[in-house]
Image (cartoon, rainbow, N blue to C red; front, side, top):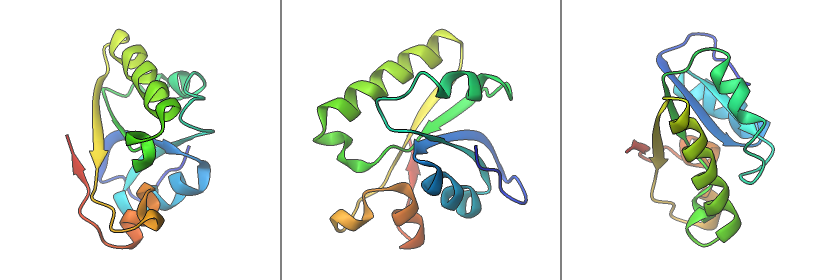
Length: 116
């Protein structure tokens, strides 16, 4: 779990990998959980529940649109969080290249990140 120096966003974000979480936390001013991978969602749940998160933003890599395993892992995580009464949102951005598929790359590149 990555924590910014100053929390500006009270939501808990989830992404793939600790390095991405560290970078995203610094840019977003939010607590960001770095999952081992999109399909390794089960260990993420207690980490999100511990700080009593009411709203979570999932910021998985944009290849979730073409990678069935990533998409399936995300669906399972969303279902579990909703069972626990947590509001789940998704971060989206328009990557200009394959190098901008991660939230960290998008933030560093200055892309517009929308939460839906």
